[in-house]
Length: 127
Image 1 (cartoon, rainbow, N blue to C red):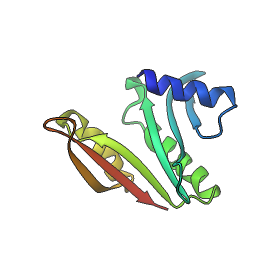
Image 2 (cartoon, one colour; image 1 turned 30 degrees about the horizontal axis):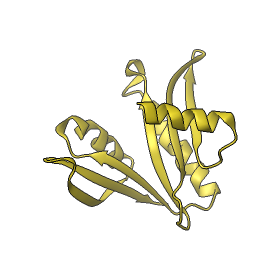
Image 3 (tube, rainbow, N blue to C red; image 1 turned 135 degrees about the vertical axis):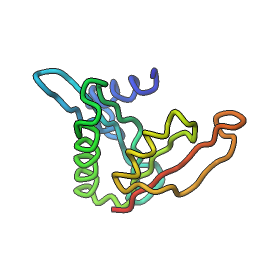
């Protein structure tokens, strides 16, 4: 959580162009955000660092709208690939299902990455 807040703080200051943040607002309240940026030392690759939505709006399309807006922005920036890292833990099943629905596909799996028995999954979408 600390890392996510740090990225948002950097983006909010406007001094760091490496991180972009899009925010979803409903009834004057923030209900979600996505943080992303160009992957260093690549040509046209981007990382989706964090996406979150309020439990009150889950399943209402907020996350999908944020990802779609992010993809549109990356296309305008001539991006060609978006990468997402997630966990293979069962608790992340709904998260992986969300990304699958947004056409992100598993590109690789790093076994025992987070700890023994907990793999890192790298998902990607080509634009």
